[in-house]
Length: 316
Image (cartoon, rainbow, N blue to C red; front, side, top):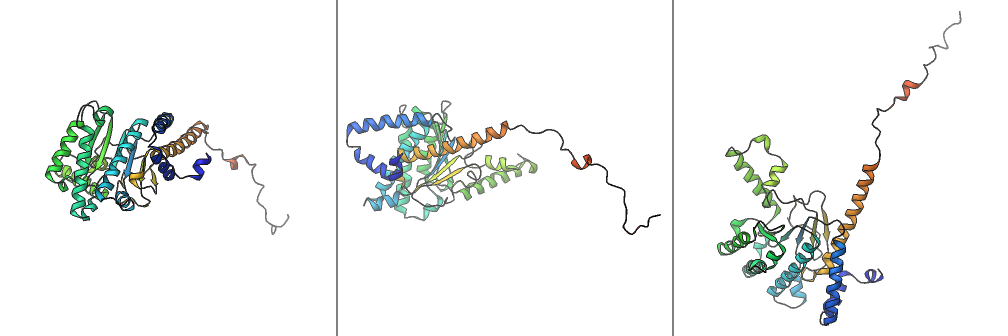
């Protein structure tokens, strides 16, 4: 479309935010969102999406807000993105809520992030009509639990137990506190302990077992799409193992609090489009008939060579 070539997704989102004050536009945009979701559901959908939610602090500085307000705005974007992903059919979502490296930040910010995460997760599952209950979402914390304060950890485990019911068919993995190197180290230690206890044999240790012993466990599928916001083109030690094969990595310039419906929908459309092309190529390759006969040796079909003769040989 001509509009999409002139305006970026971020600028379109800015216009939409301005028009939110008009009730008629809110109704119209809601109708458009439902239509977009319906179209997305007709094509391939990533099964597992991961999000590096970067840009809350920059957003707060640009808008002259308190740091806490920047993180609160990011939490609102998360709820919106979760809603879009689950509506179109994404079953597994992993968020980078808190890196182990974040402990280097000020104590005030660390406490703010811990409390905000706990409160938001509580809000997702606090009653029978909560988001997690209605959408059948299980919340599972992945990361080094030894680093979580006892009171926060107790609340998080209560949230996990409350959402771990037979009715769930979607999972929200919360990396808190998490780094990929710590995840891999945890898996190796667990595997060594199993070996020392005689639970496994040495010849049973393989890549599948190491992946099974990671924080996510054996049920988590391989990652399909990883998104990082705010323009940084690095993974920051997040899911390095899980995104090593057949995973699309998208680095977008939008700050996480500005990452709304259009942002996630455009990335899902892009993934679906290229996945469709890939499936078409694989389907065409599968239809090409293969020659099952042994290759013919053409040299065996040539006539025999003439008798050997030498120019120095005398004629008798």
